[in-house]
Length: 429
Ligand code: S3P
Image 1 (cartoon, rainbow, N blue to C red):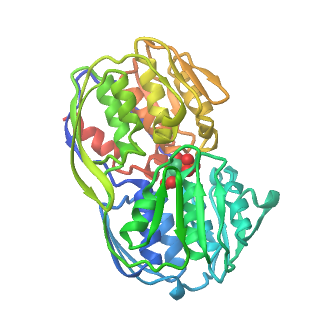
Image 2: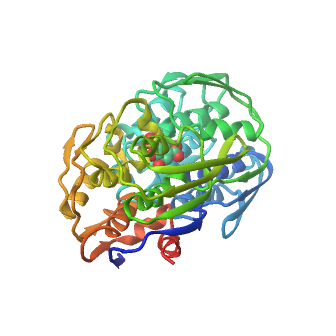
């Protein structure tokens, strides 16, 4: 448990930083690099706790993975060279590692047990276990396989045609991975398009897949070939500084080489809608991922309504958007975001109790929140609840809260942004 004391600032944030690599893309680079034959070099990899769990899992399967800071080199002969792990696999706090690797483990000829930390142990795994069972997967655990720890008896999987009942890229990706390793053609459809990094990366490792609207079709048995991956800055990490610039008068910052994949840029659409002073310069597309610089300057924000199809495009940004809402010019409504209840914490409750501890009024609903604007925040002792995004929301709130804020369990921030406080300090110079 680490406690950090934070103070409000009276000078705007300035300067330019590149936030660490995208968490979703970093995980996938290790997964596809391990499944591929040959060498994969990953640059600007996110050296955070969650992604390290994915590296450790593939090391346990015998894959050679060397890490030097944010460069990772994977040498693999593909899945046929994997070995049965000797010990249970630890997924830590990482939902992405858990869901995606269950899709892989279900298709390997091994017995594998897997477990997670206290938070992950409470998060639903049945959303992937049920469809994997339809493919012939044998996965067992308490409450009919709803929760970790889980025991997987790998099988030859058959193909699947499936419409995902939850808006989740983790579910879609787990089933595409299982489909890649299964026999026949697997077709996954979703009601609302979720992040498509799996689809982009499959293509860059040489797989064929068809994407028509919100349906993805993949032929099983395709071989992947190792490649080089550059991981763009994580827009979900950038979001905290985008918000900080909107909150602290006088700010003018640039976040370079940030991922601009349109399945992730809902935050930019909402900021525009709220009247943010923002300029985006897109400068490259790498392995299907759009990358560019975002310059943002302080300007007071308007209230808004966030719901419907945009939700999966900003699901991880809702904690920081809720903080912004407290400073907008009227009430902001967030709806259709029931998935927040299944994150590292129940984020609807965690956001509300955190903002309330700063003296703000927040009304929660089953699928979101109503947040009045123009609220004065008062420094508070606030716990991250072990949730990295709640921890960073507290740190940004402290910049405008009157008096001192104490952030307890600040270490959770290492999950996705180990250099968060160093970058915050840099922007204050
Ligand atoms: C992720 C998908 C999202 C997101 C998580 C990462 C991914 O989760 O919240 O941080 O890498 O596919 P869900 O698929 O549960 O919505």
